[in-house]
Image 1 (cartoon, one colour):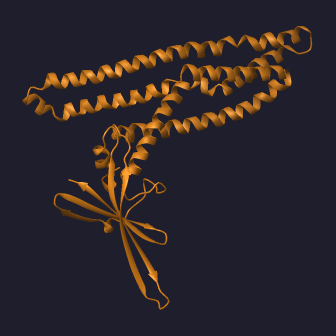
Image 2 (tube, rainbow, N blue to C red; image 1 turned 90 degrees about the vertical axis):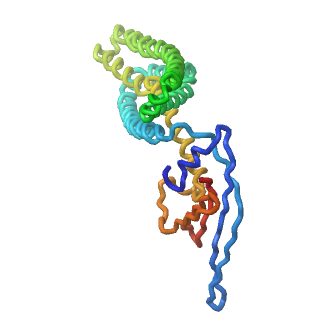
Image 3 (cartoon, one colour; image 1 turned 180 degrees about the vertical axis):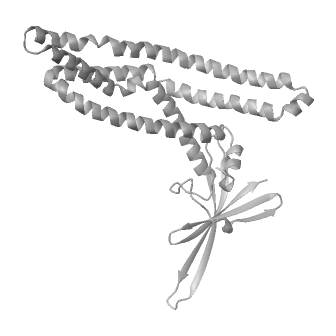
Length: 310
């Protein structure tokens, strides 16, 4: 983010995107039959279309990355645990009543479909919530950092209106999230509790007929609940998954914006790769800073010269 004035290029972007002109200089070295080396340098002007303006990059670096890494680990552990649990209890339930095993798979599939249908707007709402909360924090930090100037020029009313506007945006979006979560909670609670009577109702006739012992009913109920929980990961964690997806979307757009804003990188180079600082050459002419970065590539070298107004 701080390399090659990426932070500056991101701030210069307009809401509808803009085009940046880049001078690409490529140097190639050839050796003839006599062993003499010759160097050929070509320069071509290229244009790069920058993405839409990235809001609150500090929040994306600090909070979104932390949320992504933390929940990613938790999600992987949850999935692995569910797979092991599912493999263990599926054998028990299948041996007791195979039809019941098929019914629970169908029930979990229907529940997952309706959960995704009812909560499909949560991802977009969570993206807006992250953005508006970050905007609110930015306004409050700016208010604190410029407290002396605001007090000197009596700008409390104007700055207070800006803060109040951000708070109202956060609250309005949070109300929309609460409405979706309310409907989702009604469905998921009913989904979890309405099915509890099914294993007893299905297996009980076999007990009264003397085909199974009383302990088999308890085993079938326990296996049924375990399998239901294992197959309902999306239903049980849909709200967190939607927040997780919103964070991924913000990080992905931030990643792509940094790739496009850094003239010395292509789409295959890592964002956190290192550069040789000794190759930097800054020349200030007529109010223009020409920063050259050299990136080593296989079979030769290339340098890209980007013109960045001061």
